[in-house]
Length: 116
Length: 113
Image (cartoon, rainbow over all chains, first blue to last red; front, side, top):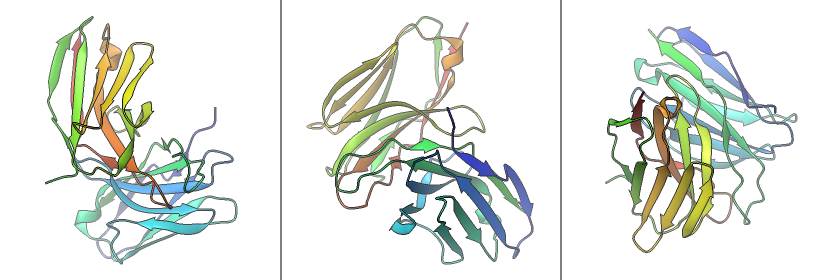
């Protein structure tokens, strides 16, 4: 079965540079979530999109922005990178019916971002 | 205090043992409860998904939810070395568009042959 695809898998950037992470959800899934997992930490919710509209926002820095496109893929844009942004960034997708039952969230393999 | 508390372990058991993993939570709005398995440097893999209180069984895995105690458990029977991973509990509230997952810190499990 098709899974969530993330690219790139590894990314090395210097401080103050920008980075763009991409996520391709499971076909027919309409919701995308972004999570950040620091070393030895649990995943922390950043932002989510349902049907190309932002649906929820967590502890995402103002330096980060994201969007979901017409084909449902999503991109997380990170500017003015800091050393503390080094982490695994996961995308998850689900098929949601807001107000009804929760769709199961399936995670991608993650993008490992290293800021030097 | 974190919304979801999980003992990080590490937990080491012999092959064939029954493993019990637990989480407690403080947010009474949580209605959906999940267990994910994460191998090193990989994405979390959904193992079990339950709604509200009760038990759910899937092969060697059993998930239990006790909402009155705000306590969830995952039991692994006949544990195998391939079960060695970090197990994360995750929860979500219901309603509107708020389906973000709140995770526990994860328990590192090692099953020794």
